Structures are given as C-alpha cells and as structure tokens.
Length: 464
Ligand code: AMP
Ligand code: ZN
Image (cartoon, rainbow, N blue to C red; front, side):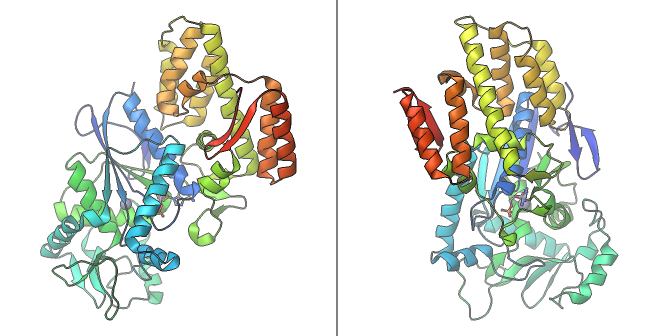
C-alpha cells in the first residue's frame, strides 16, 4: 500500500518513495543534553518513533541516525549567550562532559519507558568535530563564509532559496536586524559555523581549528553527521516545528551550498505540546514536566503518555491536561484488559493475521501517520466478530507500530473489575497527593488478597 507523508518542504502530503528501493535513511535531531527532556520534547520523539515503525511495517529497511548535542547549542538566539552544556556544568558543579553523560543516560531511560526504539546509530557532536571542520572549510573555499570578531559565519545572502523551507519574509527579518546585537553580521539570518573561545576564558570543550581555538556552531553538527552516516541516503529529516525557521533552514543552506546537491527529500515536523492557555511547554518558560515527575514517580504507567500522544495527530498542537492523562491511563488499561480477555478466549488456538483488518489499519497509518484513526481501527478489530485467536494475532501485529507492549499485557493476569477500580482511584489520589486516601486504598486492595508495590515503572498489583 502507498505511504503518504506530509513534507514541510512542499507543504503537501506526498507519496513517499525512498532514494534507494526498499531502504530509508532517517535523521532525527536529538536532545541537547544539558537537562532532562520534558514531555513536550518526548512528544516529538514519540512521533519520530511512530514514523520509523510505520516505515518498518511497510517493509522498508530503515537506517536511523540520531545525534546527541553535547556542545555548541547556545542559550541565546542568533548565536549569542552561553553554551548550554557549559552553563549546565556551572549550575550543577560538574564538568560539561559529566553533564552530557548524565542527561544522555536519563534520555535513554525515558526512551525505554516510552518504548521508543533506539536509533541504528547514535552520534555525538563532540565525536565529529573533524567532519564539521571539513564542512566549514568546504564552505570557506566556495566563498560562503566570513570572519567576525567572535567566529566564522555563513553568509545567507549568498545562498539563493534560503527560505525555501521556512517561507519567511527575509526583508522583514532584515528590518528586525536593526535591533541585532551582533553588528558584525552582514545579514540578520547569518549564523555561526565556528565560534572562537572567548579571550581570557578557559572553556571545558574547545578544539583547534584552521580559524583558531573554539567550538562548532549548533547547526553544522547535524549537516556533518547526517552526511557522514547516511551519505546519499538522505530521505527523511525530522524535528519539532520550532526547528523549521532556523535550525533546519540553516542545515539546508550550509549542506546544499557545500555539496551543490539537494539535502533531504522529506522534512517532517511534529507540533508542540502546549499547556492549558496555549503556552508552549519549554525549559525557558519554567513550566516543564518530565516523564519521571509527571508519570513514573507517581506510579503512573509511562506508556499512558504514549497512548495520550496518539489521541492527537502529530501535526496538531496537543494540549496537556490532567483529564487527557486520566483518559489515557484508562484507555491503555482497557486495551490491555481486552487483550487478556482475548487470550483467555483464544486458549491454545493459533491465530492468523486478518488481511482485511490489516489493510484498514495500514490505510490510517499510511495516511500521514493518523494515529487517532489507527486507534479506532484497533477498537474496530477488537470488537469485530473475527475468531478471538485471529483478533489476538492481528492486534499483536498492529503493536509493531503502536508499541504498547501488548505481548507483556498478555502475560499478565487479568484483575477483577473491582480491583481495577480501586487501582484507578488510587492513581488519582496519588496524583492529587492525597497520600492518606492512597494508603487506605492500598490496604483495601491488599485486604482482597493482592500485593501492591510502587515501583519506578508504576504501581504493580499482583497475587502473591
Ligand atoms: P532540544 O533538546 O531543545 O533540542 O529539543 C528536542 C526536540 O524537542 C526538538 O525536536 C524540538 O523541536 C522538540 N520540542 C521542543 N519543545 C517542544 C514542545 N513543547 N512540544 C513538542 N516538541 C518540542
Ligand atoms: Zn539537528
């Protein structure tokens, strides 16, 4: 079946065809590891995980590269401010290298909790400095760069079609340049390829280069790494919508200027998670929730967040609310219970994947990853009159895309409805920090002969 994906470059849903038959090169911009990822960031990584699983479900062999930004991402816009890693190091009294290692591990733990598959290749900005220097040198040889007091910059006026992804009004941006803080920049949109280490300051992360001691700009790393690991297999490049105007626009400019060839064919962007009132969730807004503090530490199954994310199409803003999360907790529990019941009904009988139902599911996911409709197709399957063993085999097949660990749900023993209700109430009590009620409910559940354990993965209830 044909796969249609929305391409930010053409602003249309396009039929996806890879450069090389049967294989896909996928690059997703990874985290800047100076702090925990917030659940907004994680929404974007869930969207990318679904994309990868859908490509795999369609039979493609996916080579997925994700970078770790451990240097060069500055706190201010327009290449001013401090390096986020060095700032994180100052904040926590550790080295920038320790900060990067710690938050990379925290990110991988979040990925595991959300069943986000690891990329085929992880790459760190600090491991590809020579490749980044080479790329800057090529740009210099071709006349796209100039030197200022604080670094080597890319001259965006020399690259025709600079705004082909963002469709920004460049003239209006130039007007805004009157308030530009760096008077040495020729154009408001110019960006740093290499920054010099400030005089009299010893940076923790700095390298020698043909232009002097310093560190790479943020955008150059993604160009260097995607070309290093994907070569000519530049099919799909993803990130959040905030990357369109600057980060991805600059990646395209510097890569195409260097090679003279089109960079990625498809650009896909996930919309933001916003909190009630329309504000985006961001570290700078001070309103950010992590997976640990919103889910894991409260005994809430983190896969409920994955389920919640699927309720909204990835190109629409998703509003975070307690009701949405409560709904998702119940939704995933209900789904698991349906699977357990089917398992009981199917007994030892071997099931077959039902092709008709598979086509219906495929139609939804291949329509630009329509997960709300895909979930409806799952419910239609579960409620259908197919034999239980066939429904079970088919839903396990769908789970290759859903990533809900339904095979595990199948192994667990179903709990009576009355216990399920007490669990749901206890989750709500813990969310409301009503620990007295939470303890009462634990006692009530245990009085029925069950054991309750609060673990980092959530509340576990089982018969001892
Ligand atoms: P960062 O670590 O800041 O580079 O961001 C990691 C990823 O999360 C990027 O792809 C961003 O575009 C994305 N992102 C940042 N904030 C949000 C948000 N509130 N909702 C969804 N994605 C976001
Ligand atoms: Zn990037």
